[in-house]
Image (cartoon, rainbow, N blue to C red; front, side, top):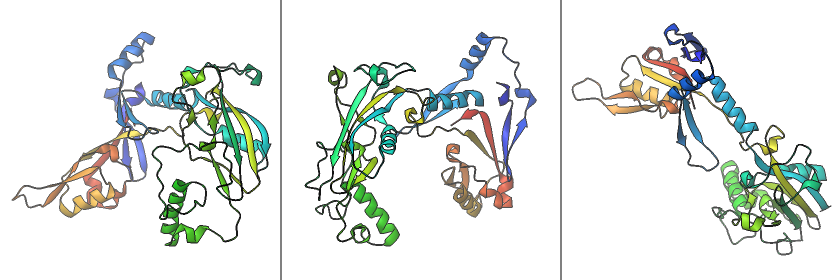
Length: 351
C-alpha cells in the first residue's frame, strides 16, 4: 500500500502527486502481515443514506486498488434477479418482440436473490423451477378510452406516489396522474402554461401507457409463503410501451438470478464511483468580502463566523465541511485566495 506515500496537490492545471518519502512502508512479507496492516488502519463509515436507492460511504486506510476492486464487485459480482426469458403470446404494438423483451429485461426486480437458487451457466427454460425462477405476466389491451382499456388487473402504484396535476378530476393524458404532474411542472417551466394546453391535441386517439406497474407476479410453488409481501419491480413507473386503440400486449416473463459480468441488466447499481477525500487548509485568515467570495466559490465547505469586537474585521471564513468540496478551483481566480487556501487529496481516503 505504498501508493499512499504522498498527497495530491491541487493547482490551477489539475492535480499532481507529490511523494513524501517518510510515509513509505516496506512491502508486506506475506498475506498475514498484509491483513494485519490492513485491519489496523482500515475503517468504513456511512455518510448518507437518506434515499433507499443511494448510499454514500467513506473508506480510510486503503489504496486505490482496494477501492476500485470494491467498485467493480458492486457493479459486476453482486447477484440480482432480472428477466431472462419472455414468452410473447400476442404483441400488436409498434415495438418489435425483441425490443420489448430487451426493455423488460432491464426493469429492476425488488426481490432478495439470496432466497432463490443459483442457476448453471448452461441454464435454459427447461431448468426453470419455483426455486430459481420468478414469473411475471403482462396483459394490456388499449381500448378507445381509459374506461374500456384492459390492464389485466389493478395496476400497482407506489404508496408514495401522489397525483400532482392542477386538475385531478380530469382524465389523465398518459394514464398516470403522477407522470402527468411531472410533465405539467416541466411544461410550466418551459412554456409558462398548463400541460393540458401544450400536450393534448384534439381528435387524437387515446394512448395507453404501459408501465412496469402493469406487470403481475405469478407465484409458483410455495413462493407466496416465501415472499409474503410479494415481488414487484423496484420502480412502478418505468415506461415499457405505448398502445393505441386495438393494440395489445400479452406475455409471460421469467426472471432468474445472475450477475453484472454476465449482463448489465443484472447489475444492482446504476453507477458506482469514488473520489479522493479533499483536505482543505487556510494558510492565512480570510475575512469580510473575501470570506463571502470564498463561500460563493465553494458553497457548503466554509462557515462564515463573526469576528470578535475590536479585531478590525466583521466576519471570517473557517473550514467547515471538506466533504462538500467540488474541487472546482474557482477560488484560484482571486490571487489573494489562491495564496490563502491550500487543497490536497488524501490517496488513502475515498468517498
